[in-house]
Length: 125
Picture (cartoon, helix red, strand yellow):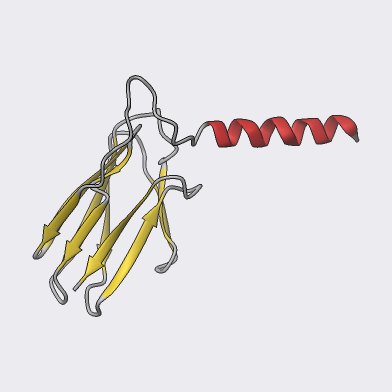
């Protein structure tokens, strides 16, 4: 019983360590980057700094596709989750993953990595 508790503690520690926001010498934390879009596609990079850009401003009613591309294994952003939209997609290394965004209503859609350590948003106005 004691051994299984120890295994759980170690597994939890390792899972959290893999998704740490702590900056490293190679990857300082990303600054907030805002991209205005009137329609079309926006590429979002997932790497050791998190998601870049972190905020997309979209025009209500204009088509919008987010294209996620993970460029590093040194990140916990190996998937993207949109809690409001109930979307969860894996982000394979160096592959584009497109997600069509609803823009019919004014709303802020939050996206995050699987452990909610890195996040961003799409603001529709």
